[in-house]
Length: 563
Image 1 (cartoon, rainbow, N blue to C red):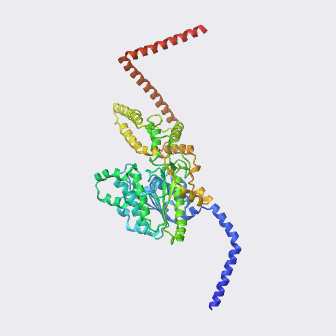
Image 2 (tube, rainbow, N blue to C red):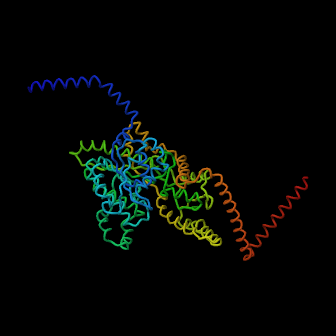
Image 3 (tube, rainbow, N blue to C red):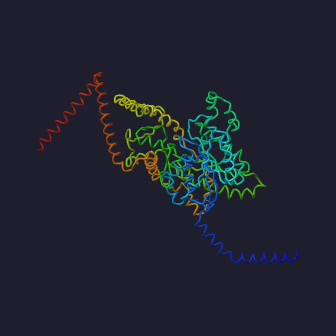
């Protein structure tokens, strides 16, 4: 009997081998053709249950949109949301899905509302205040985690920044370690987490104090003591944001366990480059606030180095890299780990999503293009004509802040008082200058980020994936991108109608005439006061007037002789 079974088994093996030999070439060609027309990354996310933190933020929205548009057959996207501004979690989701950003998604995935599962959560609380039922569903169903949530405020209090950027990351990793179906955990950090260095490699740099010690101390120290020790803790980093993001990376490294984890470090995230359409932006972070301040005429001078690299990266580029990293971490890293598990422990790969090394654009070039775009497409109801100068000297910067910013604000507030209205411009200007001062650290320096892992990942993608999930910034045309960025700020952020451009241009002409009249009147008043006090000034004035009179007389006489 055994011999018979063995013989039958041998015959089966021979038949299988013959079949494989017979159909080897046609199958190989079919697979090649299929791979040419199919996106492996898009196919990977189909049928998956995905958890996204920070889904209501700028990058989170674009990430959701891309997932639904390229992988409409995904199972569900869980998003952690809390009620805000009187809106329930469902109302917030409904508002997001009915925005301009998701118009293309509704064509590809009409039932998009059914594929989003909003889970009430508060990252400021332990266990995120998630209900037991929701927690059980998340733990048992989630395949991929994209951790995008963070506080990006540069002036945030250390306690709050630690809670959102460090403690919340630790708690999410604890949740992920209990997910039996988890395939990949992708943590979004920042390229400036180690901005105290000029050259930054794709490694995790340790902080002097362990994250656990920082987390524990935030629980019992009062605010006064925290304020006192904050400068010592952050050291040569400029703010609590960059410091806590560095701590968050350390937490990811320490709590990774056996999970497939990757870290993405984007630089300054800006408006979309191509997808779903050029120039989409919906927040004031990064250059968007500066573009509005310059376009409205509030910001006329900034202390910045024109030749410093403006390491801007489009948000859709970051999202494309994020989805590619999620696929690679789940598929290739898992296979590699199984082969090397007995040799050495798995390491966390870090991907830099930056533009400065591959396709640099400096702040001077960017500022020039922004102002050139405002000449063609001005913003409505500008305070003054758009103009911005770069200064590198602190004293010069303080002078221009007094002359070009605070003085006009005070004069305008005086006009508001005379007309019976509440003065507000000085307060607005002070807040603007305070925010600009927090950006000065980043617009006066340049960094170098190594991109070996990012380039390696690009080489791993098929031509179709390179097209659908393009994160090659070398293809980016900066002049075209910046122009679309300015247009996007006007259309999507300020919600201004493009039909109002002629009226906006007329408004700028009126502001120009007012500017000329004001400067002329100011000059005459100043000169009149100088004449009243100085004999020399009077002599110069009489000399100029007499010279002009003689010149006009000579010109009139010569004209008469010619006739």
